[in-house]
Length: 126
Image (cartoon, rainbow, N blue to C red; front, top):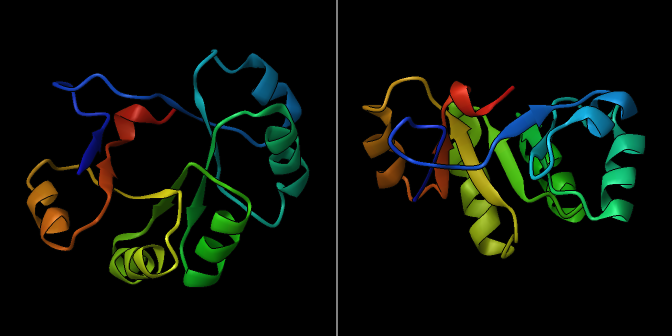
């Protein structure tokens, strides 16, 4: 299980982007995070062409399937849909890892028991 953003573990840094300007100003090595798939297709296509790693927030199965089709590195999902999306990811062999955002480290065990790929703390997201 991947744990992102916990103070004990060095991990990747995610930067929320909603414009080309934010992409160009993002620190090198950041994972670009897109919150709204429908509004950000131009940005996602740019990331694909430039080979920039990105993540997509997916609150439902359909968005997670699109994130997979777009080659997202990570799919960040809500707790309510995490288990269903993880099942799809395993069935369809997603390359993307499924992360659920948590704020309390006591939640790690819960999601580990669900066989989720990982968790992400808000500290990892700018």
